[in-house]
Amino acid sequence: MPSVAVLRAVAALVLAACCACSPSVGAPAAEEVRYVIDQDDGTPIPGAIVVATWRGTFGAHGAQACNRIESYVSGPDGSFRTPNDSKFGTVIVGAYKKGYERGNSPKSAQAATDGNYRHAQVYHYRWNETNTRGDIASVEPKIYTNREEAMRASREHLDAFLRKSTKDRAGKLSELHRLRVEGNCDGPPQSTNGAVPFYEAIYAEQLELGDSASELAWTKEYVELSRPKK
Picture (tube, rainbow, N blue to C red):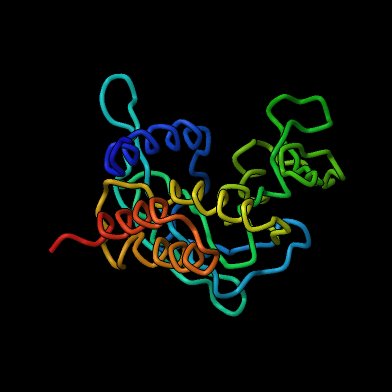
């Protein structure tokens, strides 16, 4: 079986490919205020452990690199703050809280209904039970002059989205195993313990659910590999 280090490298490439279409938008400020949101009812989720990675491109072929990783805990209003530092790249956020699973943004910037291809509007989506298909529920009337403005209004790439879990034990364990990729980053943390709190929380729930020794060992190795180098 491949080592965690090898699988981390492979997972990083996969995650980078998925996130390459998530551009940073808006004028940068010193910090970005973000939220952990319940995708179904829009309420903020306090006490979630957030992992943020800064990803950018390098080389002639635009290969992706993870340059920095930090962790945060969402406050009573579901908020957390990430520093804006363009030299590290685009910020991608994921979150974990017991009783929840990964979610999707309920809003997305799409082509405007006025026929102007440069314009965009914010569409609201209703996701199916398995979170694999989203149907348009409504469209906000405001028309933005460009897609970047609409994306910022939708917050689809700013916030982290979770959904209350209805899965059984096997489904919850499978979700925890998949969630490990969120903290995969070779870049060092600058101001926090990086992905360590994120992986420790996943490990604690695996223990509670009675996961296999091999899966527990795998997550434990992620914890150790994520510790900031002294």
